[in-house]
Image (cartoon, rainbow, N blue to C red; front, side, top):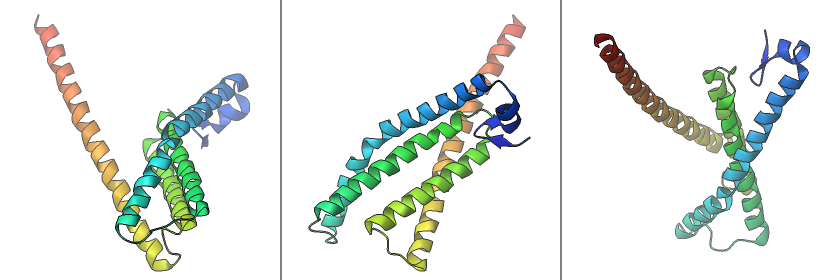
Length: 170
């Protein structure tokens, strides 16, 4: 059956509506909570970004509109990026689907933010370069997360095996 945000469509249409609505409400509230936590980092990231531009001689003065647009857009980006992590809490959403949705939403959000602020020129080449860098970065981060999780899981499994052998021998 078709799935929608970790809830089977059949359960959504014909199941216990209170239970389904309760689960969706919890996921939405978790998204909002995570988003607001991450949102506080938007202006900090923007300040570092502007300092780097200033050090490179690219930007020496900014208009009030540029600063406000930067603050609002990076706060929105941080809200979305932080909130999107709720995808990994949805039990019925396969991990690969969650990763693909997360990556696609982050890609679009970053691309729109960079274009809106004029940090990335509109054109095939700049967007292609941005896309390659984003995909490579996203894959590298997930490779690190996967290898760390695998190493930790292997360690826990080894400890469990040793404990199990110890209880069988006694």
